[in-house]
Length: 440
Image (cartoon, rainbow, N blue to C red; front, side, top):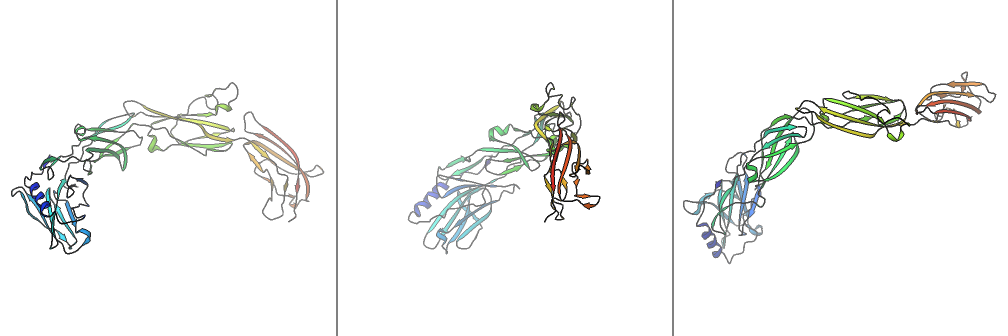
């Protein structure tokens, strides 16, 4: 506890000044402290308490200022600090001023007075300065488990006693909010916070980091005390066992056969073992096939990335179970995505016309829409039933030439046989005519 010595004559001096100047009006000229971290008004409008954060424990970071009323010039300012030996404001205080604003800096704990004089009238104002030089909070590792990692901290904000002009007695300074606020910080990220009274904080406060991460985290406790001053503990390095099941599938959809890569963010998952289950959507299972047997009978034990090729269309789910076996107990987490991957159903659409006329548009007769086909074969006939072109790659087609020469415009015929990758296999047989046009 820091004690600002009582000043028994201060109240008498203050009241005498008020009586002597009762006929003088000074508007908005009381002492202010823009750099104060905490301000507490008192019952008297001309007297406030200002708290300054003194991180370097210098004992003299206080700064007060007063401005002449209405911004008028021609004022003199006389600053003084209360002296307990003389029971009066007899210790001179240096200040800088320009006739309008006066500022006193490098102030120690204690009571201060400034007398303003414009030649015709004077006015006195008072303030108390408190340099808050609390010690930093402690930090210590307490425990870690599958729930997270736990740290302990303790801190006791100092109490300050001052002499209250209005009451004429010593008082303990009690801020409007007498709580200290603890924040557990990992790196630069605030993890969790707690608000405790100074009595509770004497015995310590425990906070958890329940978020998963990989490797060692740099932890500190950041504390804001009841005077709104911030203090930081030293750094403690610790690792966690917590796991968090997360994964991504890329691509999430496409045509069969579709190769999908399942991956995780190692900085979040923090696992030592991985167990994958890949399912087909339950609504699409064939009769008599269980959910577990729909795609894979056994789980896949493999650290990501995991790649799997889907041969058939459908909507597929994926489950990931992760474990961290580095701690005294195995930590387990899992995630299930019912629609992790969508494999398009087989599709085939044959066009009705094409125009190989050199304008780079619709130059090749090929399938307009084609996806998820297991087999494909197409044959083109002329009007007399002669085969003029055939191919087995569904993404290729006919360029409108026969033996290197432009085919005659007109009607042609196509027969397509294809098998889809759906289960059961879907067969396509298309027989139709189409037009070859060359006009521009």
